[in-house]
Amino acid sequence: IGRQIVELLELHNIGTAEERLAGARAGLREVGLPDDDEFLARYPHQLSGGQQQRVALAMAFLPRPKVLVLDEPTTGLDVTTQGMVLRTMAELCRRHRVAALYVTHDLAVVANIADRVAVMYAGRIVELGPREVMFSQPAHPYTRALLDAIPHLSQARALTGIPGSTPGPGRRPSGCRFHDRCEYVQDRCREIEPPDIQVGPDHTAKCLRVGEIGTWDINRGNTHDTDPHKKRDIILTVEDLRVFYGHKEVVHGVGFDVAKAEVVALVGESGSGKTTISRCIGGLHREWTGAVTFEGRELGKGSRTRSVEDRKRIQYIFQNPYLSLNPRLTIAQIVSRPMELFGIAKGKAARDRAVELLDAVALGA
Image 1 (cartoon, rainbow, N blue to C red):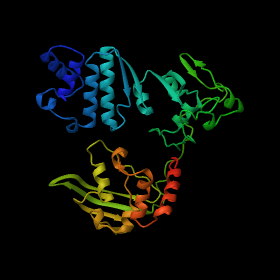
Image 2 (tube, rainbow, N blue to C red):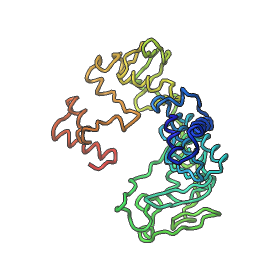
Image 3 (cartoon, helix red, strand yellow):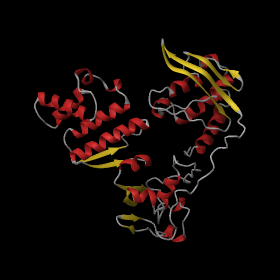
Image 4 (cartoon, one colour):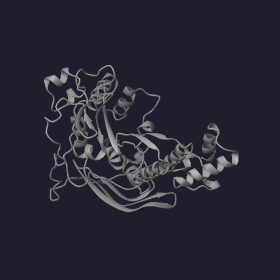
């Protein structure tokens, strides 16, 4: 880490060797990281995701820039670490009077850090305005659809997805580019490309129907929460789960159950044991005690001790898609492989089923 920071200062021809090392230490202190020799000698894989991102922030601020461009810097971090990185970034921007362009798909992040928000669709900014206005009085149907698609902690909401998918370059429709997915569409929307229309102070939207479609209501989609007295059909039970890595116990007596057609959320910061528990249930970790019961029968402690049927019926989706797909196989081979392993289909039948599955997840075959 220390060598990488010093190299950055060398490239910018900043200071002597001693001054560069001192600058590296000062940069790490500024983002709340240790500045001792032991930390400077660490490699990136020896740091947590939040530490890595703060090292990147320290390196970005060392040449004393006037503008910072941040491309999804907190996407892979848990919310606590994300909050800490965002606070560090905001404090550094204030201290050094740096302007920031923050690129993200995460509206929760936008709501916490932005002064102004520009919403993009199909290569164009469709709405631009102050943060408070954008989250309380969105004018463009796309901005409203984005807000309707996210949960709110204060109330139970039936989330609404946006139909269709964003058109790629070369396939963008005439007129308003959002018209084929918009619930307020009229014939003129398909023909006329909307200009920027003034909605309010410092607030514009590219929509011909601004002022005609009413105001957005945060309570739209409110629904009753799950009935706590509804009969649950339990399919999976975890009892007194204690998980070990060698002699070290990392999960202590966890228990919960999951019913059919139900989602149970296992929530906690990085290192709290969430992934470890899920790996035990999926048969990917064997060092545990307690019981994991599926459809009334106890499961073995590793995938090799479980029946083919149980392995087939409990499937695992990994956290990192970039590392969970075999780079040597085509997409058709990857999707067909489980069908061949479990004897569901092979050859042309497996390929045809793979085409159906890819269509089902909105990917062209």
